[in-house]
Each structure stands twice: as C-alpha cells, then as structure tokens.
Image 1: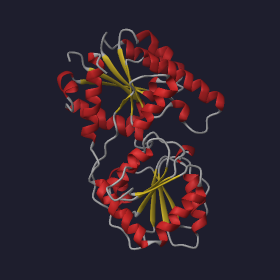
Image 2: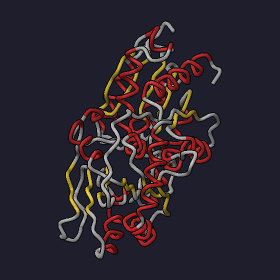
Image 3: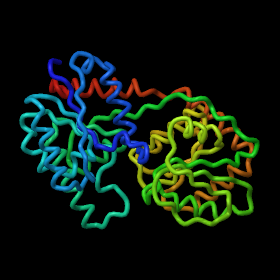
Image 4: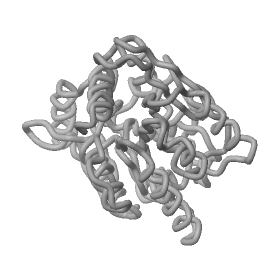
Length: 352
C-alpha cells in the first residue's frame, strides 16, 4: 500500500509503573508491524502517535490534542486506534471518519469495566456504540470478545487478532505445589479480594501466594504467606513465574487474559474464573485442560479447587503434564502481527 499505517495509542503505553495487557498488546504488535511483520506494513511503514489523557474520559485539552493528531493524518490513510482512546470520544472521531479509514482495536468494552454505576455504564456504552459505527473496521482480541462487541453494538464482521506470547523456560515445580502466583493490576475487576477470601479458608494447609501488580493493596490478613510485590517486569517478572507452581487469576471480567498464556508459556497450570475469553486463552491439551475454570464471584469454589491442588499430588502431576503440552501449542507475537496486518489489508481492499 502506498500510504503508511498510522497508529494512535494511549500515552501511557510504555509506562513500566502501570503495565496492562492492552498496553503490552499494542507495543508488541506495533513494533512488529514497524519491523515488517505482514506485507501491509512492509510496503508502507508505520507512523505512531500517542494521546495523553485519562481515557476514556479525557480533559478538553486532551480531546483537542487527539483531534489535532487526526487532522494531521492525510486523507484516505488507515488509522489503527486503541479503543481506550477512541471509544469514549465519538465526537472527536466524527469529523475525520469520512476522510480517514478508522480501525478501532477494542481490548475491553468500556461498559464492561467493573465498579461502574448503571448510569456511567450506559453512557459509556452509548459513546462506544457511536464510535464503533464510525469505524471502517473493528478488531477484538478474542473470539468471545468479538461476538460480545458485535452483539452489544449491532456490528457485523468484528475481526479477531489473538494475543501472542513469548516462549519461556518452564518453571521447576516444587514437590508440594505450595507456591501460588497471581499477576494482574490490583483492581476490583481482577478480583484479588476474592483470592484473599479463598485463601482465608486454607489456613490449615501450607502455601504461599505472591500477588504481582500495581495498585492499592487490598485488605488481607497479616499472616506472612501473602506477599504483594508491586508491578514487575523483565527479569523480576520472569523470576516470579519461575518460582511458582500454580497461576491463579480470579478476575470478574476479562477480554482474553494474556497473563494466562504467559503462565502457560512457563508450563504453569492455571486456575482462573470462567469469564470472557479466558477459556480461549487457557485452551486444552489432548489429555485435558491444564488447570481449572471456576465461576466468578465464588471464593468458596475457588478455595475448594485450591485445596484439591494442594492436597492431591496426582492431580498436580496431571495438570503439570497438560500445561507442558499446552505450552507447545502457543503462538507468538509475530503471528498476532501477521493476523493484524492481514485484517488491515482486507479492510483497505474492502473485502473484510
């Protein structure tokens, strides 16, 4: 294609103090598109802009900045814009929708964030609907999310580009399986409070739980076997995975759950809530699921599954074997970038 791909990302996409799955996805695929993953970017290049602001509700100055960024992009160009930036400001997109080919990448529908009032959720849903109907294409990061977004906003043909994962060295299991790990921002949506309530039912057993993530630390008993590390990256995060036996993600909502495939890349079994695209991320091996899916908002059920893990060595062996097998089926970020490039090409050709 003769025109470069223009990409608009939140300004905090590279902030190590506030990592998120959406930011990680954006950076991984944009860097690979820039490097030529997929024929579309290889022939035309990538132009990246960042949008400062408290998205999806930015200050007036940040709205003006986004409008200026879009105004500087030449007519008929393709613009891939992160949904956190795009979906709350349809009035900013609207003057540019006819002359630009807007493609919105939805990581999490705005109204699916937990803790919103009914009125706030309804307002965000209406804004997102307007924004997505201005787009030439919409991309989601799981099949479940694509179906959900399409049904919620009466869209057809929402595309899917699944997150990739970097293959890692398998963790070395301990004999007792007592090392539990949760990696997620400390927010209501991620459900660390539910995990803490489940662990409170296991005081008769030996275990330790490390919670990695940025945010306010939730109330928890001062027992010494629950540890909060804050956000980790690089070698420190790798060490957390390497020194774990079981990965636990008790989220109330997830579009996909990239940390699940990151855990599986270390051959760690996973216990996670059955929400959103989590079953797609967890997947299965020929011998079965590499862990367990539990209902959301149910610390008692979660506690029962964790108790079985801690007390049943045969189950631990089965889950570990399945996690090793699932690890072999994981795809990398290059595959995600190629999927995304193909989707963008099809949108540009009008065949999507």
